[in-house]
Image (cartoon, rainbow, N blue to C red):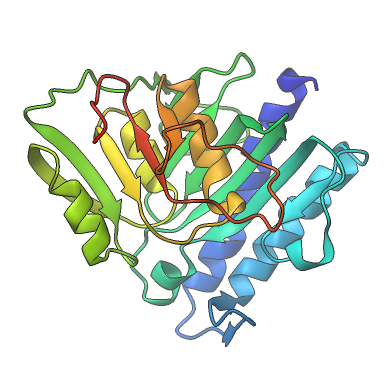
Length: 262
């Protein structure tokens, strides 16, 4: 894979998808339907999916593409693939909370090597450079990249940790796990932004004791890895891998190395 070609494409498609999402977000009303698993889907999900899918297939027709909106029709037969959540945080979108993201990732041999996470309502754009390092680009976002801020995870103080948790999916099990740590402060965020907060050093630890799918996490995982962070399975602290049958993730922990996991 030519990452020098891939990453500008990821950036451009994420911005284009974000533009379509915000056009719909600005309307006084938009269509919301329930999928077979009862999760919501909107016309913004579908519009963003169409933009990203068309762009990736045109540029890399031989690389398998898995997206949330099309995953039911795909069986994985390759170890190298794109995985996309065109609108992560649909509940936040519907409730107009702003914590939704566009997520595009490239996976090889179970590892998300490159990714982009764009939060159009918050004007935050995170991605990996061709060499794998993670950055945040500061807006406004034009055809060419603007100023870049290198991302690096924190050096955590285990006596005073910063923790980020899900905004829409927080539960007692998560609270009980967080209570094992000495926590200085907590914040909540929706979608894959939680990975990016750890990548930027704004949080030290993000535990997820709930259902997620690979397209929810791959891009944020890539950004966090590019900033020196780690994502491991909750049960055995082994690296979270991708390309699993059914696309479902186990519970996991994203963190800055130096956090002593409980």
